[in-house]
Length: 155
Image 1 (cartoon, helix red, strand yellow):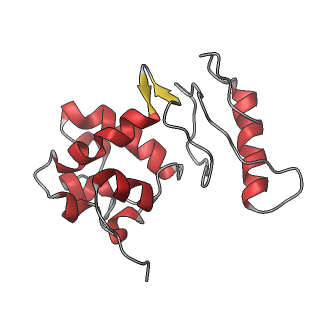
Image 2 (spheres, rainbow, N blue to C red; image 1 turned 90 degrees about the vertical axis):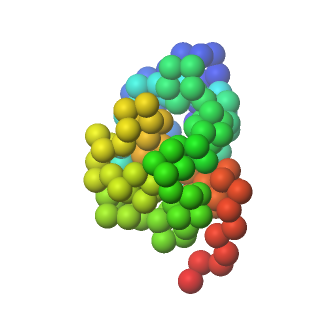
């Protein structure tokens, strides 16, 4: 199932169907289909717990009011360094593979233990990042490329 490109948000049932088909596709099961989100309007969509690994997330997909996935990718270097850390301190394979507040990117960038610990001007971006990161829409490689960092081979 592909996302609507008319600017309308997908219905909850459409999102559920898309996620179920994508999960089957990831597992190589019959009836699976890779999620294709070109032009998707996902504002308000509950993607918590979703695994959109390898979904075709196109940069023009709207993820919040007038904010595209491409906008989020473009702001990552500034988001990661606004807390005073260098990009190299935040964008490491160890940090980019952690999905807990112990050593995730926001913890590394801001010593944060929740989104509430992120400075107020950056909190909306941090929230969008966390949603995309936890749904596997942002891979370590995508993040590193956006930040101009070489991760090297995984161990």
